[in-house]
Length: 98
Image: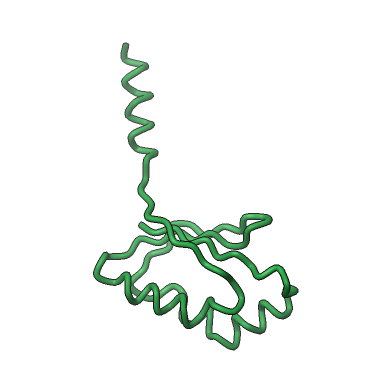
């Protein structure tokens, strides 16, 4: 999985950001068809945080999708991500057995 921080450009208002996203085809092009959205949140003070599951062979397509549809409205940061919650649940279950 990959988590993408899409940080709003602070020098633009919401109408300007919307115009840029529309002009770039954001809704049509992001995320690419090869990605499955796991979560998509607004983080106040940051912007939008999207976690997608995507095959490693499709990372280039994800990058191109971001370059074409997101840039101009957001600056971006990418973070490899994994799901730790099943491990936490297993550890809690083990504690209850003891």
